[in-house]
Image (cartoon, rainbow over all chains, first blue to last red):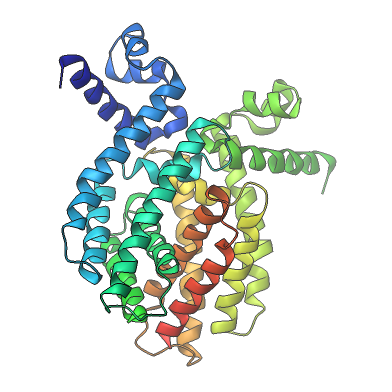
Length: 192
Length: 192
């Protein structure tokens, strides 16, 4: 990775933390310059526009979710262990500084048409498809009943993740992780 | 209700729709003036400051949730029917124009300390307490097992609501309501 690309990634990581705090909508090149003490002209050279910066923050986080959550989970045995691995790693990811920027963006941009919303929709669809596929391996392996609809189960699991985000990040509830674990256990038991 | 109070409520309803679209953080007196074609000075006279406007939008929506969701649900028979009534009415509420502003604010303000975050936390706690109490009537009535923890069940139900918000508002999935119904059915069946 060249120096320019490396600098770009570092700035995108800082931009991601900032976006997690103030929302992707509040993330402008001016705001990023003010908080990082980098020059506005330098940031413009790297990112071009507010919208381009927001889109690149989305991509950066999508890549990190693939690296930290999805790829390691796919090394778990198919079926229930893989589903548990995926959820556990996502909970670790959302427990990091600022929570999951894609979750915040899913609620922030649902009524704001444009390229950022389109990308949030596509990333959320990809994530649900991944969850659905992993739930389907549970049916294929015989861990879950044959009549379990993997998509329905995936939506129920997504609910557990979103509730964790609220319990942990907004309400600072010390039992947040235990609630999420119990929620997942309930869904898995119901699918058996 | 006097004319002034009536005007104030009307403006707060418009402010709520705007907040649902662009987020509570984007809701400034200037932005509200621009979109409603009301005078900035008139709005300042009604609301005083951006923060005060945001807090009043939260109160207005809290009142509407009590009127449209909680109070009618509390007229249902205790236990499972009341839980189903509460969830069904919340899904109606979140299907309205712009979705539920309190949900959006729960993700937007989780990292922004101050009076608005404090109020969002308090309202979210009140809502979870209501859900918990209604789940507890299910245990008391014998609809749910005696060892069901009403708080855990409430958090699981909250997950169903949040997943509905994403499936319906962000992904425009025509099956969103059916998924939510199925998610609730699964939780209730597991609690029996």
